[in-house]
Amino acid sequence: MARRDYNRLVYEHRPGERQGRPRPRLKVGLETPLEGRTAGETRLVFAPPRWYDFLVWACLVLGPLSTLPVSPLPIEPVQRTWLGAAVFMAGLWALLSNERMSVDLRSRTYVRLEGQGLFKRLTKGTLAEIDAVVALTEAPSRGMGSVTVHRTVLYWKGGRLPPLIVSQSVVGATVGTALNAHAGPLVARSAAFARAMGLPFYDNTAFLSPEPLRPL
Image (tube, rainbow, N blue to C red):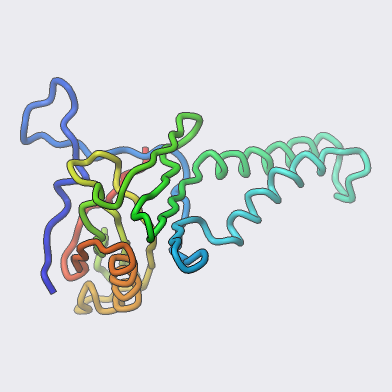
């Protein structure tokens, strides 16, 4: 299968920077886990797992409820207030970090909720704007007890939008093990996504790639 280095799309030149001094895109907030799933016969959705959405809304609802005088929590009112505030803020942070994308396979269009924190934007476009689906390996260390991270990333042509991580897996790694030894399931899912959207697919899991979106 053909391989192509898409790391160049992870970087962008900022005003005043010299060429050849790329800077990685930065992402603020939590890294929301996404998964691909079909919604009907003509729609592909990249969104957090349903359990994640449930957990977020549970924090937003149960946080304030735990501060009420009738709360069943056997702790002091002041402690309930702090605990409730912490749970609510955790849910709010997760909600503001939420990203997702819906693809209409029939019209070959997409709607993407992109951005972190309060500065989100809803972007609409066509699948022709997406360069490729890339399966890659991000492994900071290959020593005993280290982990290898495999990701599925959507890259936009010309860096029009930041890359979108639509799937990932974390596996244990040992000395002497090939980087892509356990990448098979993710590669298969990535190839299926690419086929459904009619996009090129590249398997870059055999070599290391930098983190697609580096958190602050």
